[in-house]
Image 1 (spheres, rainbow, N blue to C red):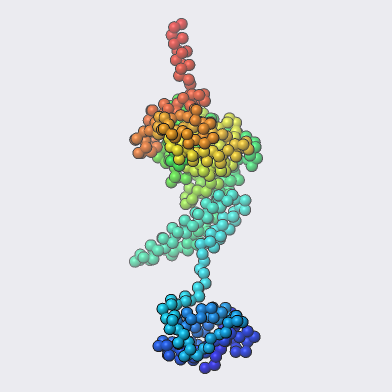
Image 2 (cartoon, rainbow, N blue to C red):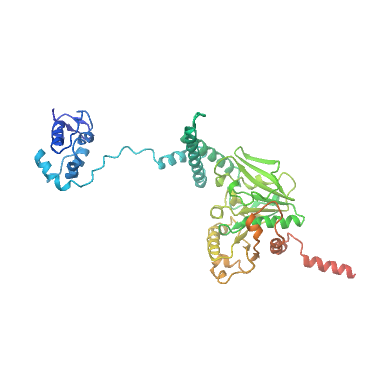
Amino acid sequence: MTATSHNARGHDGPTGSTTPVTSVSFDKGTRLGEQLGTISPPVPAHAPHDQALAGFTEPVLAEHPARHALHRQGASPPSGDTPPTDTPSSMAQSTTPFSNMPPIPPADPAEPKGLHTVESDLVLAARRPWPGLPGADIDAAVEAGMLAAAAAAVENTVRAQQVFGGDRPTAPESIAHTTTGAVATAAAALQRQGLPPDVITPVNWTGFGAVIPVLAGSPGAGASVLAAVLADVLQLGRHRVLLVDPADPPRSGLSAAARAQGPWLAHPHPQVRIRFSWRAQALLAQLETCLPVLSPGMVPPPRWWRPPMQQPHATVVDLGHDPWRVTAHPLAGAGAWLRRGIPQPRPLVVVRPSRPSLLHAEQVLARLDHWISAAVATAPVQLVVMGTKRWPTGVAGAAGRRVSALLPDAVFVPHDPDLAAAGITAEVTPPRLRQAITPVLRRWGLLPDTATHSRRSSTRRRS
């Protein structure tokens, strides 16, 4: 059989090529295999070089790895390296010391479509509805697409295991692109319905009464509990109250705060709705969506949260679900409730009576501090400590510069075991929790001062 050589692409070529690479003939490879005790079938002349090398035993490959690597690359050995003689006897004798060496793995196959490629395709799909879509919304849209693709793959697997065939399975990649595009489209539409791009102009909050954003200083601080307590105190004081819940429905701490889902709906976008329900005499506004992920830009701007009835006296906003992102970008989404305006919002910061909670709150306020200095956001005016009546020993000393400025007027809301176990329900919050926060609302003029009222009553009785 005639010996062949291989060109730079690894294909068989004529012996007289310009840069020949000497290769052992297939007949010689077969004879060598017979001599070493391994008989390999002959390989066709048109087979790739790696298949031709498969006729040799693994110890022979281990003897000269550099030389075989050069064969795969289609290059000649270095000038100072004299190739060993390809005689069966010499190669058989030299393989003895390397008989226990592991085999060289074959060349890696072509890399399949990796995760980074799929994500890059979804990023392009997310940017298609609006090139100016913020990065946070692009990330959320990609996450929604990946999650939808995973769910579709699981569903296809279940269908394949069923005895009776079902509907034709949908390609997960197609589901991912569709979901990503839907999230990006909704976020782009709602972003362009938001507050004016001029961040210096104050926002007109007159349609919402007194705006009270409740910001969590740390995870699990109790912002949703405080928001419900504030709404209960105000409505018991005969105020019309709007309780805004801009969190993802599965992450909401107020998901069970209404007695029943209300009939009123606002439709900022076909994929995003706002449902207004009753919590006693307070109106609870919550988000609804059929998409798997709610991006920051999909949270409707404040004007969509205005109730379809009389103007409220006060609006309490629960911002406890994502304070880290809200304080970094309070220009859109839920962070818009922190925007400076007329009348000025009164943000509260909620913490736990622990050193880690105070340290985390300091970082949250540090992120918001840049927007406060730029006259975009409103600085928090009140610190509320949940779950205690006083500071534990050594905890208050962990407060940073920004939290320390709020320590003198800090309000302590005591622990309630029933509320801690059940969370916020449709029942009114415990009286002692409402009593703890009532002085703050009186100081802000949202509730009548009982001391002044009692003095006036006693004066009238005397006269």
